[in-house]
Length: 135
Image (cartoon, rainbow, N blue to C red):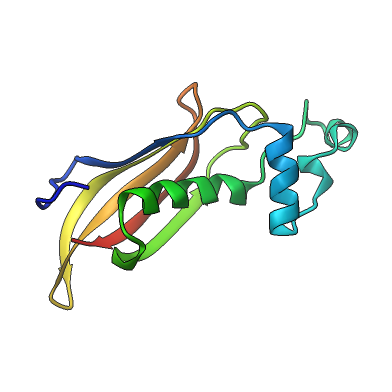
């Protein structure tokens, strides 16, 4: 983030992640305790009507959280919320971005509301949300 106060429309979060692999999904299963077979078992996913396994929504949210804390010190984050927009397929290469949507003040503290998105390489939004940060 810049040393001066950011302006509305300024992008302050940007991070690209490598394609999601089966190995990454298996590691996330172990780390999160979420062992839903839809994320790691191809046969199970196909029986459920999907062409392949797909990413945990919370893994995608974790990527966005990492992108946010890479750009803004955690001590300055006042809130972080997201909503899931689409399934993230195996192999998706995600890009997380955040732009200043609004400048505000609360309890005497200057803040910014960031509009956050996570998109795949085709530009499809997988996750949308916002964060309030202290300036």
